[in-house]
Length: 211
Length: 94
Image 1: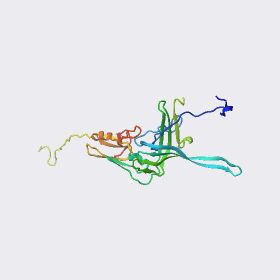
Image 2: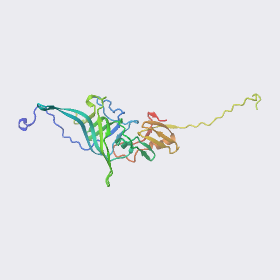
Image 3: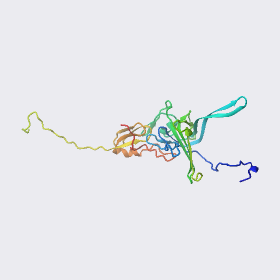
Image 4: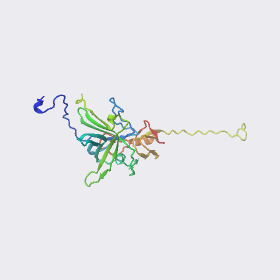
């Protein structure tokens, strides 16, 4: 331990971050939110995990790019005109995945992303209609990311109640793969979940780092 | 005619037809789509309205339906993309 007075290090109980850098995108699965999560709840009372059933299949988004996870927050300063801003009140509105998708088929899957109608499928065809958006349709979202194959280290994000929002754009470029941009999966508070996980759960598994 | 019977009485004729056994298998849809497929052997048309629906299928049409996959190849993950399975439980569509 270096001399803290010389180096400027904090003294006392200090916890530092790990030398562990994650790379690339997680897989992104979604499923009708009528289905129960795989752990409903787990031993620590967290609701997460996905298991595709016959009635509610789990879908895996195909080739995805530029995935980011962000949130929408309302912030209002507590401003005292005699002193200035003394605090900021924050409220989480939603959590949101943004991404680009390079796989457009089958239509039976992408129709959820594009908010299209229920498909009809038979030998040699599948059909979806472009109608109005069904606002009552919500999904669970499950995004696992394995960052250490050798030691089974992985991270997952689980969002309880999400939907595909905002306008999409399907770019049909010459000499390049089609890209579906503007995809946003926005997760809202689900009030039948405990207050500490209204929007979702992040869970990490790593037996070497978490002995 | 047997004289034990009166004129108005007719002998009871019992016709025995050969028994035909139609074997069917309950097949369940795994895709949340309105599925319409014709059995290649029987030519009979089957319809599933949503994922989980169960339809009784003539036995000769079953192997082909169980072989059906959605899409030519999967790009990512390990999904089988099966369209049907032998019913484990769910809604009867017909």
